[in-house]
Image (cartoon, rainbow, N blue to C red; front, side, top):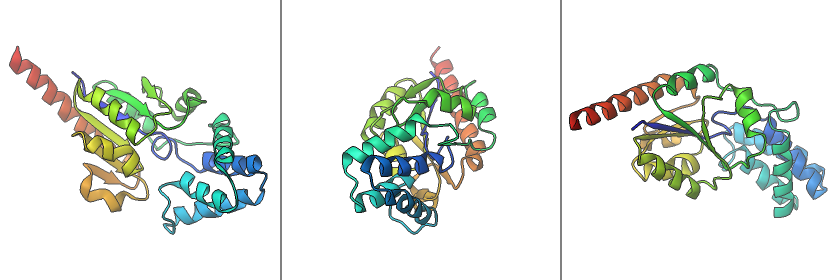
Length: 229
């Protein structure tokens, strides 16, 4: 019996606008509408400034592209194109400060799982670039939010669960509904702070609380098992 910490990928472990900018360029090329690239970047900037109703940067680019005539086929093609260059100079990413050390410490006491809607394209390379190789299980093309529910339920069968992400409805709400703990990071943290277990603008601000949660739940599991022996 060990606790499980579930991490989202984009916007949580993988920071930076490189992949989203690559998405805008990819959709523009697939749709054969060059203006989409600049419109996507402008929409991304508005989202970053808190001037958009989009749920994340990808959604902001998507809406801008659709307004200029991009269809579902172009959106899908553009996204796949951006994934093929993930963690390269064409779609650079960066890790939150101290991530590798945090994950190494957590892995001593918890199972670490990646759950992402991204297809399994260059995810291993990206995790290596981020220093996140302590994550031993990954679930790609998860179709969150619905797809997160099954992962959480499976993990709860073996111990407590903490789900960490930057989009409440995708990364946390299905976990909270099943009794799991939740940690929200990113630009919307204040909006949902009252309904999650912990929240902050950046992941490093939550390192101490995440470690405390794992330590507490590990102790709780051990104590519970010991009382039954």
